Image 1 (cartoon, rainbow, N blue to C red):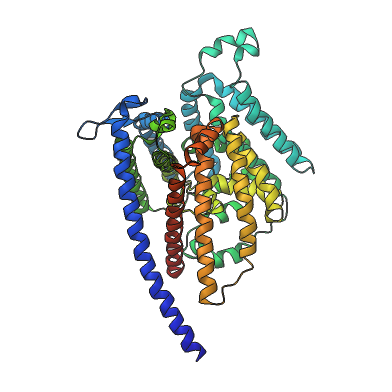
Image 2 (image 1 turned 180 degrees about the vertical axis):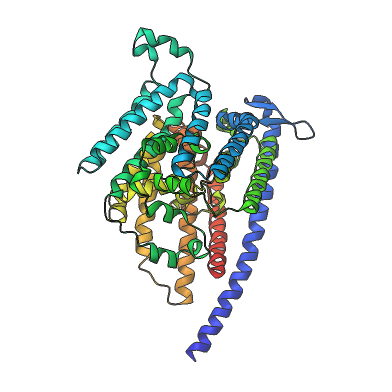
Length: 535
């Protein structure tokens, strides 16, 4: 009798969820139809007041929103970057196959190729990069087996991370007048901006060398039995990172090659030293020629999508012009939502472009944007999917050494403060970091309580899903606020942003936002259910 009742209950729940899914999809389509329509009107009505617009190519002739300097520079340099990396692919892969080069030989090849690339970018400032890198290598080799090594490693790298920014990459004239002429040869790109990624690699090398002499707790056999990637005959990133490499791989040549490896030098994704050295020795086998071709075609499609977006919707120009302060709360919401989607697509294109070339050369680095921004409803999931390779680096070299989940509430403040400083020495980034932590703490407490909760009936499961959807709506709103403050409007505009919504005109929009994000979270929960069934 109980089985029959349970069966009938399951049928009712299944039928309800199908109907609910239909409603959610209909709501989502209506929402995006409205957003697109209103965005077109905003872009058309206010384009005269915007700056950063350039002549476009989509017919009929439209102005293209190139107000974001990072996207403008990347897009403008695509032809030269592609030509350079294509030449590098031919040279590196030909030399590897003809001379059967392994890690030692390939490190020399890539050092030569990478330094030609760096010389174009930084010219004489290469001296600063090599000097700091050499000091770090010496520190690692001399003190790696001491108890205070990790304190030294962090102190050294944090010092140069901050010092590089404070002194704007230093000047040769400060060293001595005889060196001042070198200040005329600083290249086309500021070296200290790129050096932020080099700092992460120097710390990775130090930790991996330090841990190479400890007894590993990584059970490779157990991992291979559980990992779907390893079961399929491929090699997952975690295995490459955790199993370590032999002592003969921790040479200065390979270390320097790792720091300045051309495809990942400018923007990442970030790869650990262990994973890099392993694949320099034996190239990645996860992506065959067909997979690489498909990956490239998907990138081209995303690039075309970005072009359509920047030609039709001028979200970034509307945001940075300050025009949003004169608009209605509804329009402010649309611009904020659009800016976050623009940022997501921009970083996806930049990171996947460099990762693609790295894959062609035989180095598989983590995918930085494995999930769409519109498919994340909690902070933890968002940060695992936004700059995912950086998240893996943070977890391995900061979060776990600080105590991991045992001190989670305390650790997030240290982690996000470091992330803010690593990006730049700006007050708005520190505000972004601390706002994120404020939103993170309640989520962690709720998740801890939920993990002990078991849905033993249809009613309790229904209540749990509803509470999850409400929590997701709150989280998405918090994410929007934190990222807009940190990357677009700055902390000085928080009061102005709040005043737009906390009034008679703004409160209904705030309510509509909440309902929309609630519906979006419910839709994401359905997606999670479908993913679990496929697995």
